[in-house]
Image 1: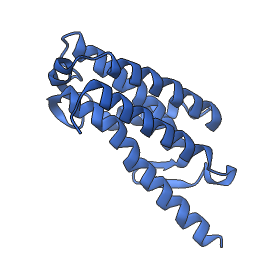
Image 2: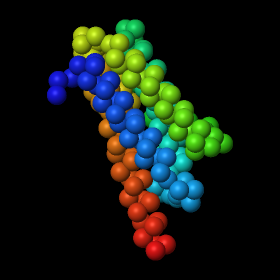
Image 3: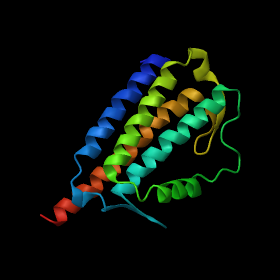
Length: 164
């Protein structure tokens, strides 16, 4: 499949629907279950909060690059940013987080759909990928969620196997 704005926007839309369906099916007991236990524990709820934050941050990054900017600052600390953003969303209920994600994803779909093929070739700095074309950042937006959803799925499977 060629990397055209329309196809990328469609992929973002489809993956966004999958994300909403996935998180809508999580039972009440699952939201506080740990998914990651590194320096800071992230629960299922915090992963969804991270998705909300990422949707907004990616939009800002895309808009900066489309306007001729260079993307994320060289000294941008993505781990500190992610932790701060997730902490800031701790009081938001899961259903509201899901609604925020849905709305922000729709906005990103519209933003990508309006891009021209040449826009996808613009380069900018992403805090994880480095200096790459915008097309790679757009793809990361949906791949990023796929990876985290896989991890949530595994964590919840362990929870329900343990409680069975």
